[in-house]
Length: 123
Image 1: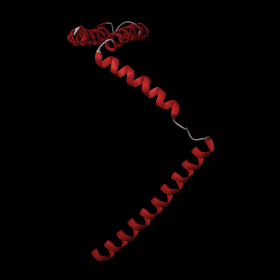
Image 2: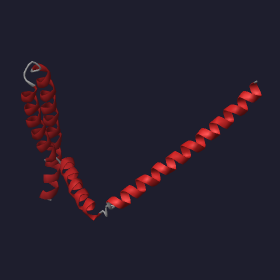
Image 3: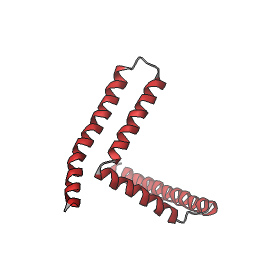
Image 4: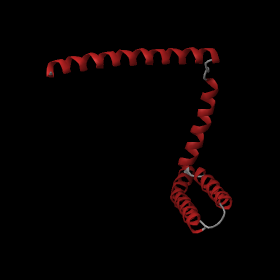
C-alpha cells in the first residue's frame, strides 16, 4: 500500500518540478535578454548551466525517467544495427543519382512533348 502512496506523492511533485523547470527556462531567456550587453561567452556559459540544471531536474520526474529509459533503449538498438560498408553506400548513392537523372530526362521529354502538342493545338 505504501508503494502506491509514494507514486501518488511523486506524481504530485512532478507538477512542481515541471513548474520549476519552466521558471528556470524563463530565467534563462529573460537573463539572456537582460544581459545582452555582456560578452556572448558569459551568456552562453550561463545558459548552459541553467539548461543542465533544468535538464537534470526534468529527468527527476516520471516522464523524464521514461525519456531517459527510452534513450538507453535506443542506444542498445543502435548497436544492433548492421551499418552498410563504404562500398555499399557508394553503390547505392550512384544508383539513386542514376535513377534521378533518368527520371529527370523522362519528365523533361514528356514536358517538351506535351508543350509542343498544346502549342500546336492553340496555334
